[in-house]
Image (cartoon, rainbow, N blue to C red):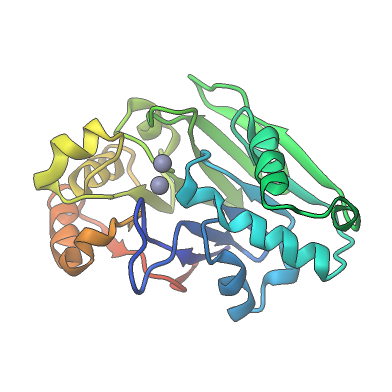
Length: 253
Ligand SMILES: [Zn+2]
Ligand SMILES: [Zn+2]
């Protein structure tokens, strides 16, 4: 199982970090922030995407999809694309496509299949190319955390969320726990008010869930020069390996 970080910034973009997108093997995208199409071209994985999963419908996680769809339509893609996300995913995407004057006759070369997930106060399973499970995140709007299981390995992605017991349950015993770490610990009050985690929150969840590795993700641009501190703060709470996600970082399980 391979995990490639395409974009690792959160909320605001920074010079060396794109908006959130994580590629699982070469066919499943977790979120599709601005710049994802170009990153997929750089790693020659543009043609193998079969499913896009949206953790939630905020600007930073969604806006790369329109460039990707235009790329596929103009390139005459034939394979269907599956899009999974919270309620109103389809209406949101179709509205934006219309607002940006996507020609009707362009949108016909392949089928887009939408799957909108219902709320999940307990772990639910998504029927897709991998065994995926998800629970509600705590992020003001409908949002999910998920796991992906492949070849006996388990990856958990928090999406954007405040720390929750549900996330701890979902992340249990995973090989890689990718967690929202938007702001450092001294900003905890602000981070929680804005429905995000800090490095310590991520470390505590990783410890309580017995995760093997923790990846800090969704770093806000204001703090990119402080990432060593992020690592130290997480390491105080979690004794296994802590990794700061970077664009195009690849982890192989
Ligand atoms: Zn975000
Ligand atoms: Zn968000």
